[in-house]
Length: 623
Image (cartoon, helix red, strand yellow):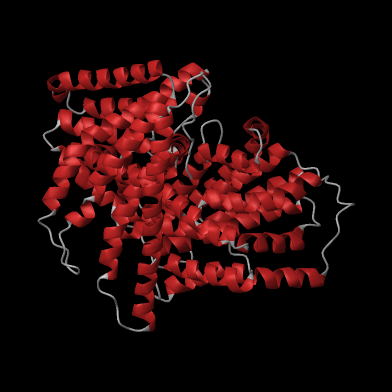
């Protein structure tokens, strides 16, 4: 889930320069087309690899290598598109609450901070690409600089778009003030480099707490906040060359398993476009529409089923809410309660495979993604039961005198229509279990299945929407992958400083052993989920905390389920959880309306989380 907020021109009388708007539009198209093409090519390459290996028994030895080369270009191109569209993950709760003039200044400040980072990273990125030219890839036998060149090219393009957006964001005075503040802070840190070196591990607090917190609360995109603090720490307090940070970012973004991120994002958009999600929701509505609170049960069940297909919470909510909300309102449901339940189901289904958070946690901690996919099903059901109990209590007096119960023929017809859509999660799971495809490749099977179902069965396939869907996939994926790269470099810096060993020793010595460690982890990840969102928190703290969990005797899949649900709770809880505001936007409901009703659902989610934490079998019983 991303807190994506466009940087619109504030209402302070400043008109955006015409040249800036035209340049952004032309360059935007020039970047979006290759980004969309890269997503499409990755799908074709990986699907070809599956067919060649499983159907024709002649593996393509170069397919994974080509996919890896294109993947870094996709990540950087997507990051550029996300910057151009204002879709990088950021915390905007405090910025949005300010008066227009101050908000305009902070928007300019966020762009200026990003601009400073990109300027600082440009030469290290170029040097890193040059060093990689001496490395030859094993299968295609080309210099690795062909792959790594994506980083400096992406940095240059982001520099261009940052400059253009800065020119558009507000008045000349706000822009000048923001540039002056950022330049002044950079100069102060640089002049005090010698002093900082003598502070030892106190620099961890200065950079990884102070700088990160200041940037995040000021509205700087989270990826840029992580990268700024890491660059400052490494260059000012250690002898590590800045090029090393670029290498760690490359390492974080280039793991082939992360290719599942853009592919599952596209799959989520595809099932919504083909009508598969709508078919599942209608079938559930036929089954439960006549029960008190029946459509709320349908919402919970539909989010569970759709999450098992798309892996994207935004896509899940966008697929389900427009189908159910109008009928639920006609039955007397209050808009605030609807959006509260929608937000709660977003948190509930964070562990339902193939969740992007599951894929990310597996890639950064080494936990088997297949095991995570298996272990995530039951914890999601436990939380669903808790939400259903709240729904039952709230709707026990609902008037259903005007509701007609669907007869057997209608239910059978709805089931037959929904059957191809319902079968998709089982197709995906069977492909992984039977060894037909890896966790990365299986999404391409889902995409091919959805295309065929949309064209031949549902007869609902809008070719004009494919290009915007590819661009949206690249944008969201780039935003996620840039965070992973930046957080990987930060985690490496923390490890080199000895912080991870200190943290491990401290957590291992907590009184109460595994129970206390689990309780502290829940509180920590609820807070991190609301401030940093799920994926950044996992990438940053997963490599540090999972070894400790294993050391105190907690199964890694069990621990993964607990921390993911805790993060989901924070992500979808007001006032800071950006997932809650995304649900409000999708449901077209004022956020104030849902704050009251959501607390009952959050209490049920917390109770379910405690049950999952206390009973490891719920996460590991089917492994």
